Image 1 (tube, rainbow, N blue to C red):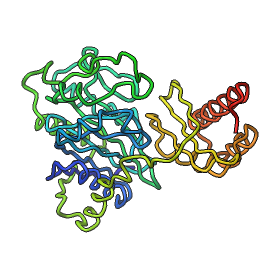
Image 2 (image 1 turned 90 degrees about the vertical axis):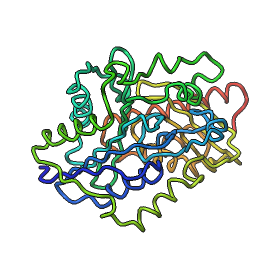
Image 3 (image 1 turned 180 degrees about the horizontal axis):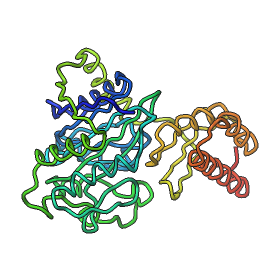
Amino acid sequence: MIRRTSCIIARSSDPCRNLAIEKHLMDTLPEDTAILFLYQNDCAVTVGRNQNPWYECNVEPYLESGGTLTRRLSGGGTVYQDPGVLNFSFILPKTHFNTKQQLNMAAAAVQRMGIPVQSAPGGSIASLGRIFSQNAFFKAGSTALHNGSLLVHANIDAMESFLLPGGKRLKGKARPKIDSLYGNLREISPEITIEGLEESLYNVFASTFGTQPVFLDEQMLDERTIEQLTLQFANPDWVYPEALPYNFSVDEHFPWGDVTVLLWRENGVIRASRIFSDAMEAALFDRIQQALTGCPFLIGAIGTRFQQRLGLIKDPRLLQIAGDVCTLICGRIRAMDRQGEGA
């Protein structure tokens, strides 16, 4: 049972610092406590934990425009943030993590302001057919994180210029227009404000858990730790994937998301692996990469390695995703063998 709730409104608009605060709040969350963290960022493109920024964003022109590119802890897809976007995080014990309840809180906060809402694919929330809220999730240890964004008066033109909807899957193909996918809440309700949405989220958060959240100041947090975490989120080694001589590639779209598998195979052994995906299950792909690395580049060996390393997974959805990735890799190897391109 959640007995205590808190709310923190960020002082900074630095995207990396706000990710650092979010991580620090997860790491130090007291038992039976839920935290609402609210913040706005300067212009930022934030990719999901397992995404490749080169697939999702026009990186070079975006950086030349002065924006920040970073990677968050949670899975899911790429989001655009600027001062016209209200970002929120629900941080709570894993035992109290409830995706439906958390999405309902975000939706209710907007509904209270007279805007109709409906659920959309991939944990998104829409109004009048266009998405205004993207959401993502992450679990670590005994703590869980739900982070999301609310487009109030975001720069849709900038989103159109810099984002690549559909990622690698639509490379070289016609991409959907951003303004057909996403819309600002202010287009529906011109009087809506960031401050009004903050108050509405606070009130919904309070009523959901039946306790009035105590306002905290980020100055109460461990500044040294936050500074260290900020540097980690800004580190190019965290943001950009390592450039290795990958010589095997396969990608596919599944009901749970897009996936691209890259392998570096040498002398019949997988020396390195990297999996990119917009799936919500952030931690799973690290486990799959670890299972693949060092494995013989053989269908039987890969299947056995998946069973050995991932056999303890109990969640049916995670088992489905891992099985799909294994089948995808093995299917590509069979096709290569038929074409005489094997190891």
